[in-house]
Length: 288
Image (cartoon, rainbow, N blue to C red):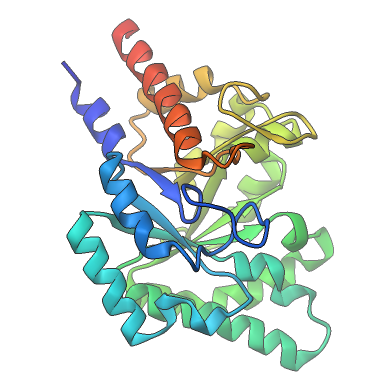
């Protein structure tokens, strides 16, 4: 018999958009233009309740979330297949971060896109907007003050919409804690990525210092300084992670952003990873 927390945990498992269908343009992650509608049915059939939306810089305004017709379609699919969309990842921001733009006009365009997404995401009740500060949008020390000053200007939009911006960062644990404390944490928080932490060599026991600010989690596994692997085959300590999650009764979402199948069996790969996580939490609950 499942405990109340196990039931809650299972209801919080979701998938990053595009991860259960074929890759497009050989990209690991991008908006699935050819299959985005099909994903809702596939998720429902495989007992997932959540989808995390994604928006690329390419064809930004053609993304369904950015049109009335598209949002009507999204809402219809959500209702028909009982799928919630609580979070959106701004891949367009990672591709074109405003703080890297040297021309003021280009900076303004990048920032305006973020505002557009906040408004349109709110229209389909998406609460968490994930802003990646990794890879191409990694935030360097000399840009931190400028970034905080600029992005804090949208706090009023977040307050009105009852939304939060969640930063996914490559900062070391103590630096990230100091960083997030510079914001109004009613409107700004953290998206935790298990795989990125493993790749950077961060130890989970050192990361718990900022976990009260974590509102969404991306599940993946990576080797230290290396590639993404199936869950349990990389360097992230999932046993410690799950023990902490259970002990602290984390109530946020878990989004699978796991390695792609080498054989184009992407749904099967997600299911393998899902079963791995479910086994871990079941074993921990039995022992506790």
